[in-house]
Length: 345
Image 1 (cartoon, helix red, strand yellow):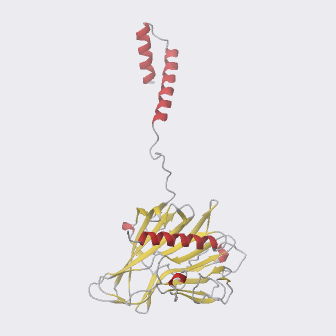
Image 2 (cartoon, one colour; image 1 turned 135 degrees about the vertical axis):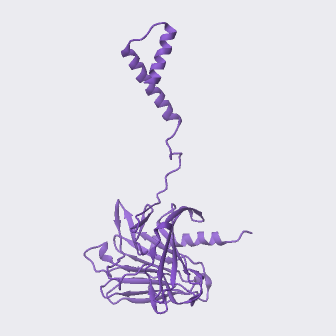
Image 3 (cartoon, one colour; image 1 turned 90 degrees about the vertical axis):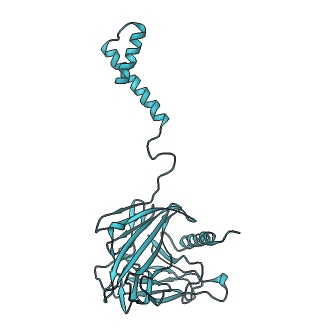
């Protein structure tokens, strides 16, 4: 209205006649509309500079849930780094991994066995939860940082740093790695084994009228222990140990990928290492009929005072259909990984 009044004053001053109050209001509204339209055409609103907004987001509630989301895969961590993996499809969330309330059955994806005991409940330091920007061989993305602490029965504190990477070009994939540190300045910690991905799979979460173990499963190409066929149907007595070692011909190295699926959802777990790491996966049916799978990757025999150890980077992938799309996507990632590690000529 101020602009309209000014325009009205200029017109009246030039013509020597004052406009009526009604005409002044009309002129004012007209001028405001025209100026507003011109302004909206000449400048874009904040955050709309032509670049599409990233589909990757995160939220954290202190002492509560931590969500890290892409357009298809979503991860939900609790205060001790237990994780549920979701597939988002058609506005709905689906999950086939189970976290029971029974502490004896529940485990996070990453834990270690030290001195004969499982060290698994790492209390998250919420003051240091955060996300950073990424630009790597896999494209543009974000990395979630979680830090947690747990103590052995001898009172030695272990620090666990969890890193999760999500990329815009890989909307259904998370790349996950963990670094452990012995915070004690005097005492070493003996390490028996390290779990780099543990999940309890429950098919009835996606198909309510089926058995919890009723999955189709793909056991990787060329993996020792995978049997005559890499695709199998899980039954109530299923048990396998799969070794992903390098064979006589490095070109035919076993592909360290295991995929589970139902008619509604699939989830693949794989090691992103380019060379044979001696990783292995153990699969078995628990007493409650859930399918348990754990990836073990090589680890040191001990952690000396203030020493750190970083596990292999694992790929978690959600999908629909059988294993074919997951396998091809994983092979594409291996090519990207190889190009990123190749030295310049």
